[in-house]
Structure formats: C-alpha cells, structure tokens
Image (tube, rainbow, N blue to C red; front, side, top):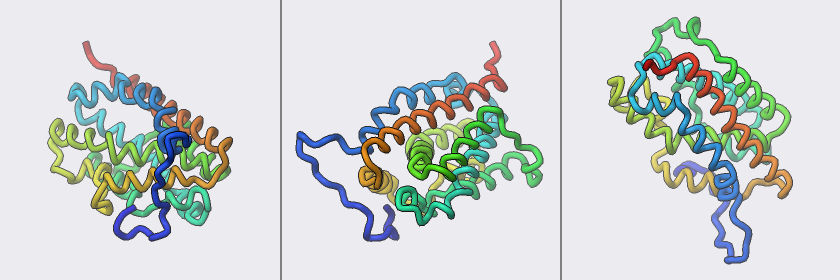
Length: 234
C-alpha cells in the first residue's frame, strides 16, 4: 500500500466483461446514496461553506476523536485476524493526530472539555461491538472512515486552513495529514485491492455492504446532532 507495504498484498486482476464487479466497486456503489446524504447534511454544508466559527469545527473534531478511539483501540487485537488484519495499517492511525489538534484547539486541558454527543456515543459503541464480535463488520467501518479521510477529508482540511487560519498541514488540521502515505492515490488503489480480496463468502460480503450503509447512517446522525448544537442563525 505504501513503499513499505508487504509484497504479499493482493495484486489487481483484470476481470472479463462477464465477471462480477470487484467488491470495492460493489461496496462503493451500494453506499453511494448514504455517502451523498452525509456529505450534504446541513451541518457539513454550513461548516464547509464557512458559515460557522471555529467552535463548530472544534466540536466536530471532538466527535471524531471518540469514533477513532473505538476504531484504533481494537487495532492491536485485530492485527492478526485473517479478515480485518490486512486493513490495520499504522500509517492510517489518526488518534494521536486528533489529540494534537484538540490540544491546539482547546489547550492542554482538552480531555476535561470534550464530550460525546448521543449519536457519537452510539457510533463508537457500534464500532467497538463489531471490532469485538465481527471482524468483517469492522472492515466496513474502517473503509468508510479512512478512505473518506484520504479523499473528501482533504477538502475539509483546505477549507479549514482558509476559513480559520490554520497553518497549512499544521496543528488544527493534522487529522487530515497522512505523513506516512507518500502517494494517496496508490494507497487507495491498493486498499481497494484488499477489499476485492476480502477473505469471506458472498453472503458475508453482502452483510459488509449493509454495515457500510449503517456506518454512513451513524455518521449522518452525528452531523444531525451537531446541527442541533450549531443551528445556523437566520
């Protein structure tokens, strides 16, 4: 996935026209509607439109910290799992960067100030549940979050730098900076190859697709809660 990735990573195949679509395509297309809904939420539209102050951005960053803690607290225990293990990559880990951002945004006492919104609590609990009981379900949440960070997350970073004056790729937006990934396009391509090679049967893949939809719904619920905290003034 990166220059240091093991040589055993799956190689792409060239399916014939009659072959089924690669699983990475299936999961992307199946969750497209939920993805679009999340992107177009009122909170995110207002945040990216520069209509909120830095307080809204800070609150959003807090919620991310709770979700990524759930994802990454499980990483060590899943690293050797045949299904989830190939996706556990140190260069993706975000908790340390989120904590650096929160320290910049809220000061050294940030841990005493952050609180999870109800939807965030439900989201993090679901991630922790599948991490413990269902490795393939964990992959659905992993895919939904990290590939989004590498793609649309970069748009958020650029807008945050411009709107609230953060140093380019500096404190405040380090969550969106993947210093261990030199070529994001190649990394995403190889991540999709891992999805295509997911070591489960077709029925389980359909369950993964449904969990991916669930992940987007949970994310949208967080945006709805944030929209309640930060209604746009008339």
